[in-house]
Image (tube, rainbow, N blue to C red; front, top):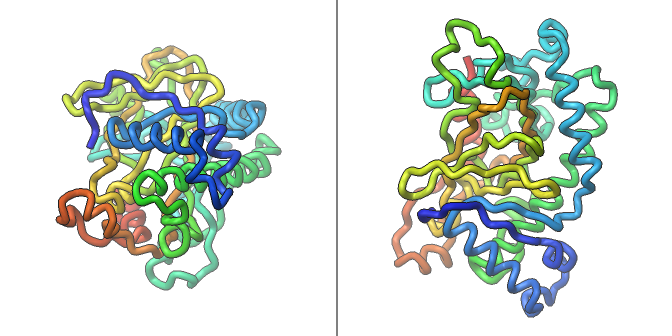
Length: 329
């Protein structure tokens, strides 16, 4: 459960990432220190920065650069990859099309999901079936994003091994039936600057993205270096800023990890308000369970929290589809 934290902790995961597949890593004191820091951050804030992650900084920056270039294209060109239910909710959405708790969000985005073979998950997967719609301009957009997703997937798997050690002393707890074949979501998001003109119907709403929690296990946020817009709510209801720190990702836990940990770790509310006159880009990678995973409180976490299960079983794919189908106009 989140506390009255006043800032977001920074964790150097480099020593852990280097050894996370070593069968003896749990006996390494440096690894144990990183695991301790992960545990504390997940308990107290549900958010933390990660540095020493190993993803090249030029790639991180170029991902944001091509995103800026896409969002600066004429609106008509962006509509070439318009998101529709028929496209599996993949593609471009205009400003105000994404809805959080009934209120249009002041951002535009490209939504991408791990592609699945038609029929592989039966009726469960049917709403999300489709191919990702990548823009042709910039020309390197698809290749760059696919490389980026592969690296984020590997990093998230490694961070989850540390979290698993913290929760139950078994690094592979999330592998196999929970996240051994992890689904992923990529949201490439653009937030207009505060000085930009807004249409009349949206003028009363300056929230880039309303208060929400994330759906899955773990999120990696890659945000522009010069704009502070992400805010995280602590236990007292204060909104704590998560300013960009070059060379880091902001990392947070999602609903599925909250369920699995039986509430030991909470999925913390957060929102985005871009008060800068500059256009802001954020590329958020969401590491999810297997699409058909049935996630429920783990026995060891139930034991650690007094023996009472605080939530029932949730099938990740059902959770995702339910959220997605309510999130768009």
